[in-house]
Length: 77
Image 1 (cartoon, helix red, strand yellow):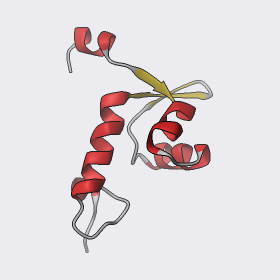
Image 2 (cartoon, one colour; image 1 turned 60 degrees about the horizontal axis):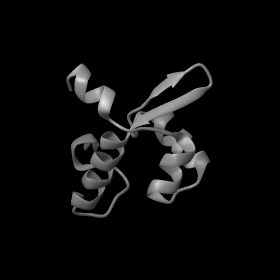
Image 3 (cartoon, rainbow, N blue to C red; image 1 turned 90 degrees about the vertical axis):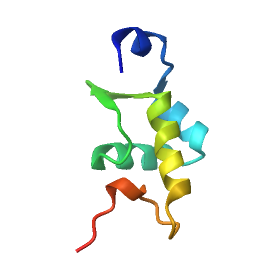
């Protein structure tokens, strides 16, 4: 993503992400800490690009077995 695209990209707080995808705030933090939701931690605060959150949801919708992990991030033994 180019710098100019990032500047125009909506940045969401953890609370806004929770509202957007209708999950508890604690789940947003847990998913972010596990690296399943891509975001950045600035001190105590998390920030997320809206396009990353929407991409995460698209991955979930495309998962054939309905698991909570996007297809490209699942690990099989």
